[in-house]
Length: 403
Image (cartoon, rainbow, N blue to C red):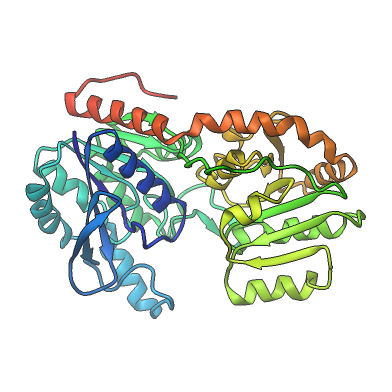
């Protein structure tokens, strides 16, 4: 089967977990004997072509005013024009249709559409091709793709976001199958009236298993807590730092890996940098952290669409403490693979960490359980499930929608 996979970025250009997940899918399809092509954006002025691990990749210049991930944001009027054009970009259908005629896919699978806009769907429909779309963020609902504003989750589409969201909701009627990486993100879109004619599926992200990962064991002198991710308020690092700082345990450690806006990072270091138990690692490979920590904490305040870092931790045998936000409760099994807390009640996190610091040995029986659970998120399993979705879309079979 030949599939055109569309995503804003693609390796080696990586911003977050979406690019890694899309690459794992494309490479898995290639290994399974299928023919994935990838369409993505480049920040340069010319089209680029090549292969990444055997997968043909076409990178086209951004058909908007500028590349969506510039190091410094443009002035507000230019950003507003960019977002208006990105709601439905008339420059996109013709360009994409030309690529579709060249690649001759049987199915078009779209993912993140920032910079492309939902006009990709019109191009695919004009060529008579079935469309599968995977929800990996809140782009269709919110120009910032987060539905998180002023340190709060937006319960509905804001009045300022509606003009951008309306064309995207209308265009969603063109999609044949919509896949959520969690039930949470799927149901949130359906609740706002998106994808009225589409089959629905839930397929979590996959994570490649580490090669020769050593067994993880708790520090014999105490508890080593890990944090992995962008250092931004939505990720809740300040909540974790405040909670950890209150722990009286001398042998507990907190390892923080990631980078973020300079002002936010500086404010955290100014407040907690004097605590010798806290290590600021900066941007480092995930294995440097996951091979050494006893437990990973994911204290997100925003509604994580899934929480890829949780699955990465599982592959290393690391249990997870996570907030009850977004898709996180769907992949953290209380008492079996980790523990959950409500970030609106921070004492819950404090109780969990104090209990683990008092009795780090209670993590030992969880380690084999998380390794076993990690097999549910294998690349082969994800590829198999997407192939089923592609076949249903190609044959026009109704299938049974997932709740």
